[in-house]
Length: 295
Image (cartoon, rainbow, N blue to C red; front, side, top):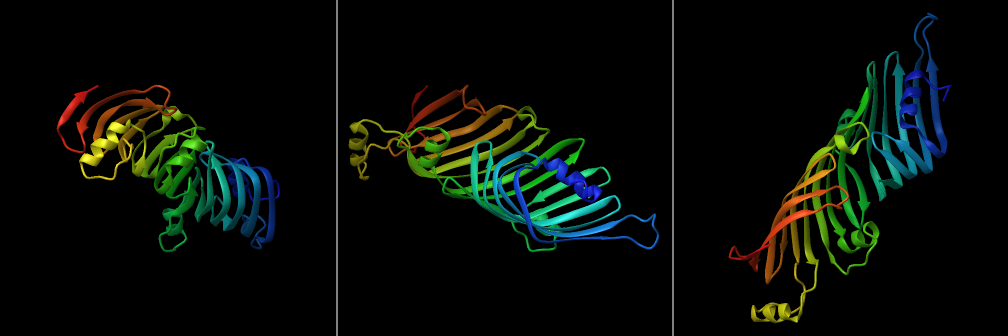
């Protein structure tokens, strides 16, 4: 670390790397003009392999395994590193992402540093637009991330998810085998300052289709048969939700549980941990707008 150019030193120090790293097939060049008072210029092309490493690039990451291809230069007070992620596994907030691929851009300025992942990183490298992509819970995640350090670290994130398995989310995230099945998708936008969850704001939507959320008695199967549908005891086969995040508080503007016989339309409030729910629903016959009861 001491041998690195000053700006590259600061970039590495902000990442706070821990764990196992190896450098291979890499090159570092240091040059200076004849004037001995001139600043030393540096160029690098580095292939970095990580195994169960930890990094802090706006958010804490652990279990980082895979490779990073980095190339950049530093001249005086400014510098940049362009990169490409080929990570087999990354863990954030006890959530594992696999097959992480996408462009990276780190820029050093006189006042701080900027880190881009996704489309803005590709634009900086004058490449066609590309998102950061990964797999999670059997689905495909697409994201774009912008973090910067000027005093307190700040970040912005936009992400969309498609094709995730509800059964895996229930089993791996909640630690329960509920028997619920379905395909999960949605969108999320977040922004925050520092590492506190109280400074996070955002919004998003969640959709579950082809779902089997809850089982009702055989009466439901009979009612479905009377409606000329395939008889079973599934209560809800679709979920639609829209929400806003303010710190640790989540406001559910819409939480609809849709079924062939009965649908529940609701809204309310919760916490990020889901340990304080305050929801109000009203029930309707099937997916019509004829109210049955309020609760």
